[in-house]
Length: 241
Length: 241
DNA sequence: GAAAAGAGAGAGCACTGCTCTTGACGATCT
DNA sequence: AGATCGTCAAGAGCAGTGCTCTCTCTTTTC
Image (spheres, each protein chain N blue to C red):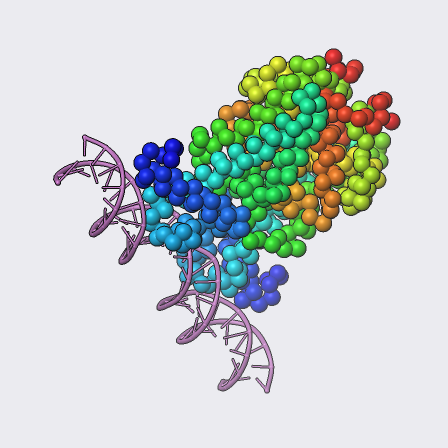
């Protein structure tokens, strides 16, 4: 009664939403490759060509689903982060890790759409990047908070950050203000480690080897936390053996 | 004159090979989704139905390409490892990392087929897992060698390995005999970190943020080496700041 | 009320994976 | 040497796809 002014606009928004809903259900069932405009139209009792009034191509529908996916994941991550006390930086990081993994396990095909192989001739329009950084923004905020609180004590014994990295570090720092270069570098390693793990688990690379991925995942993410300099329970306070 | 006995078998092997070659070229051009049996047949001057004499379905052709891909990557990794002195464990690990990344950059679509989202209703037949472990076998051998040589000195200050991990650790240890549980756990984190990085880079997650991925990659993998306990050049011998 | 814009229906194009049948060639056995 | 049987390419065909175009009807706008 408020959003769309005219009746036409209201029903258009309604139908657009219905299309994406059905498409998302199809995506969850058959995966991205099984998403068929004709099937969506069939389920809606429409003729296939009518769908093109709402999405000019199949890729545009996929783009909409991708944006929705990034937002859903981003929201899950934001909620997990917000549920922890602000000064519990390690807990927030672990909560983010588990939120990503849990969401991925609950929506495997959507996760594959976001972080799996890109579709054939897909171009990743600018609309997506905006939604894609929601989770990394949370991640950056955690590290920024930890740094500002003086809680970041990256362990020694690790290689020095190479000089040419400074430019990239400055760009990454935009989402984690104040964090020094060496932590920025490790932050990239930890972040890719998180998604690398989830992808391995989801895409079957752990099959019949890692049977209890949850336990190993928690520990691996805790290791990444330690690498970042976040406080964790030590195993041995001295170096090596 | 040697391989296939009869002429028929020889020409059959020849044609099978030609099909996979053309398919691989198509894969490199258009990606997995663009692989078309009819297009392959067209390029061979055959009629489409004839292809089915050699591959009963499109998925079977894909399976063949997947196995080839795992073997190609495995071979690249093996060569990179073999080019280093056996006792240079850190160098071998770094060589493996760069071999994986270089191969992935050179064959993006094949990499996506191996480590990207699995195809719709694909089942991953047993033939593939056999070829899939070639690279991890190299990885395990490096860690095993390093452990046996007493070169593995995992840094302290990291969380203790959880008890329930023992079962999975034993399974993973089959490819890295002798390596203790805590290093096995970190080995999983480092391995997923490697492929997570390559996937992020290849699938466009770094776009317009990390512009010089090579430098950052080398450093991240060196950090993983340090996490594993492999000897690296320290940045600062004391903890924190 | 007339003009313009939006919407659905239908036919059609070029393409896909896959199946089935038909006719021909080649290897093998008698 | 001749008959037989398995293998192969070809062609037609089915069901499905994304997408375009035209035609008609309704709604919004002026």
